[in-house]
Image (tube, rainbow, N blue to C red; front, side, top):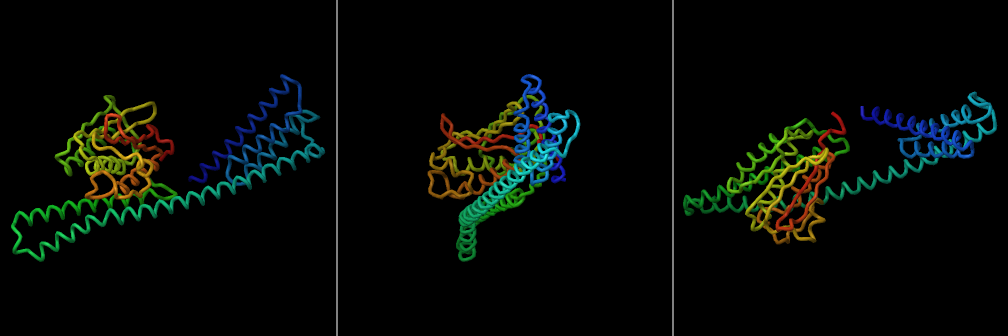
Length: 352
């Protein structure tokens, strides 16, 4: 299906380009009564088609159509074909050479870009694996230590200590579940053919679901939500987008030292929905801003790292937002604290 759409788009692009070349030549002929630029304009059209489309077919087809157009409308006898004239044969040869050379160079460039993208993807996977190994170590060590203490000193420990250790085990296990959810999301969207279940989602329902889930896990941390007054529907994979917002809110809970206020804001700007998650905590060190979405952050930072680094969660956010065709940014508020912002298109440009 995707291949057919690409072929149709390439065919339409070729027809529009050659149609524009033909119309431009007629205009120049009418205004200036000159035919010297006609071959060059069609050669430019063939070049653009060969450069923009996939493979060699459309470039070669454009060169043949251009030769026929020049022969029919701009070569004596006008508005008639004379395919055996030397001018027609030489024009065909030149345009075919342009089409083949351009197609070859374009194919090589696209292959190099694909190889570069694959290398970058492998680097990102390596970074994510290192981040995962770092993030899993702390809760697993904590669970092991708590279980060992309970087994070795079961009779000696008071009931309150048992309950505290069990609570710590539950919290760390909950963190591990969230980590697995993040990893599954990366596996789902980090592929050449992204399979998102995009549906029109009511913004208010999405935010309500996120806040209910967040308050269930962090009842002591209030979130100030600010939403548009009008009805807003955004095409998205709602489950993945809930995960993005949960990751950003949880990052504030774990890393925004000194935070008192946490905001979740959404605005509609033109054809985009803009989301903000902001806090008034310690902010993000400037030297770490460029690494936030790479999946690899060091653990030495002036934030609350008692549970995890920010690496894996923000890398997941970036992957999901990019799969939706949006962009994500991070910075510090002028009043103090961190600010995360991402955008989503209000219309699904990729279709279902």
